[in-house]
Length: 164
Image 1 (tube, one colour):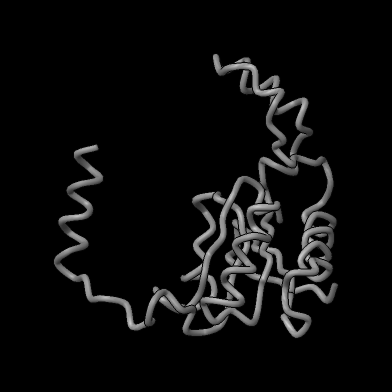
Image 2 (tube, rainbow, N blue to C red):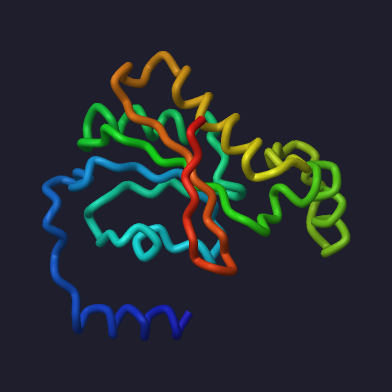
């Protein structure tokens, strides 16, 4: 953890408090995306700290927790737009839950059968359409919420939007 603390010390040298009051998203945008370290929402969207809310998980899937968080973001933190971003070469679309459970076990991990990885062997476009629909149809979110979808190409850096 020494590298983490060293990184924080370097961060303190250039740190300035965010401009957003009480964690409000200055651009009114929430991004739902994968935890993949090749995906950098701020950089890919030309945004800065404080501009948006970022909700990340394995596969960037819209789960109950994502929906719960979006409710708070919309009603309390200035979010009025949501962009779901899938990406190319995602582990969560390269196999099924069963295959991921087996892979964890093969790497010495515990029995993970009680977990739902939300892995599906389908295209990023198909998962994107499913997740955008989940947000649009969630009854606790504002009717006027703007929801879009995009796919980020990890090899080129290009973001392609989809009319879903």
